[in-house]
Length: 162
Image 1 (spheres, helix red, strand yellow):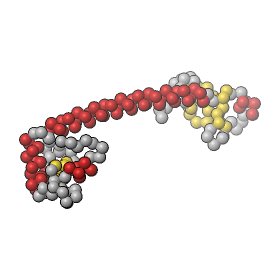
Image 2 (cartoon, one colour):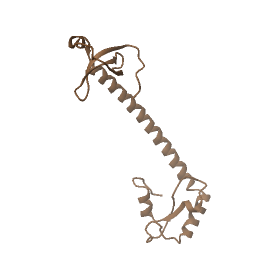
Image 3 (cartoon, one colour):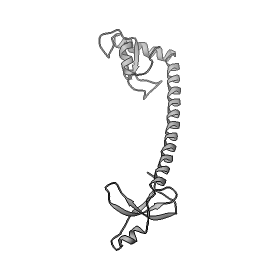
Image 4 (tube, one colour):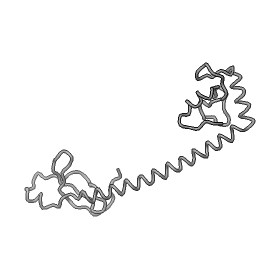
């Protein structure tokens, strides 16, 4: 959580989670606690009770506003990531239609004897990327021959229809 940078504060009486009563500065703009608890050793009960009570409503209202703003930023960031992801997959799909990819794809299937390296049982039909580190410039050991079923297992939740 960010530190409060507002100037308007007031010493208030506050009960913290463990039931201990403390005196602490509260920002009058954002409701945040400012600094450490203040010493009450030399104060009488009357002096301590002269301070206003901690304004939980102010703190909670600002906290709700902060959380709403954070959620808005998070949603925007997620939308941006989804957009980038969709663009990447569109580029990847276009790459898979190139003669360069077909040559690599066929070489990997041939190298693996058209046997799925996922289950070692079915006929391999797909050259699957083990990594995208060298995407569009793959080393053939970064690709492995797999069947449709095993490829779907490699990408759970994705529509892998070609």
